[in-house]
Length: 332
Ligand code: SF4
Image 1 (cartoon, rainbow, N blue to C red):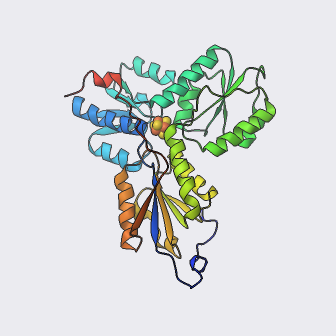
Image 2 (image 1 turned 135 degrees about the vertical axis):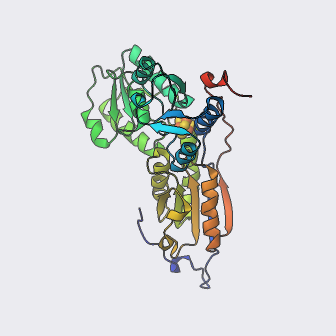
Image 3 (image 1 turned 45 degrees about the horizontal axis):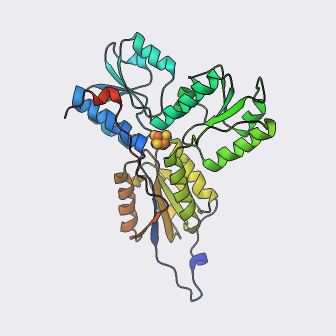
């Protein structure tokens, strides 16, 4: 992840003086509306129904969030068959396939669906285009929970396209009836590249009715792209299983940051990363509480990077209401 080692000499002005050490802090960063809603869903479910509350998969892809909810009584499971019959289970922000809903119903589980409404939107597109008998090319990362959920809406119509090699493997029934959809948390640029490759094979390929890559993913990438050219180092706070966080590291490097690393906590920063660095960029993935970013800023301030400048490229005002299954039972 380090294309070249940041040196100091290149920073000196004509008189040989070094510029001040500073931090550029991306805005927007951190929690998106879907994550906020999913985390609050588990918190409110614990308050309303008491522990334990089972959660299928990590509610959002963040170690700190998962560990904090575990301490409060949430039990994270991989599949619904690990949940005792009749118990309460929350489905994560990444969404689930209809098969998972069916398994839960068979086991008489009480369910709360915390799927992000923007993921549900992609599920509905998949249902609609499958109904109209399209071949659907789903651009996304193999094995990601969101992709498994979306593909499960219409497995007989959907083919996953992850890598450039996958483009060559696609087989469609009617090249005039093909549409692409995507995972919500991809790199915008890489997705457009994949679409171009697909279009070379299928010139009549149709695009989704509206962007599938969500506003939060796009906004965080734009903010990083804006600040990265000025940064010797970009620290992205996020977990290794968080797709949108990993994309921020890639975007930072592509946009000109000399180095970029993904860290869950400030304590994971390696002091050597700061050698010769004047400007540090800081951002965080959509599942990261801001307290973790503040700890990174404290770490940097203690080492001389106390000057923080926020780089704002958008102001987000989106909020989603809690799942209806929970709203009707809320303790007020
Ligand atoms: S990253 Fe986007 S799709 Fe995922 S939970 Fe947040 S708003 Fe929803």
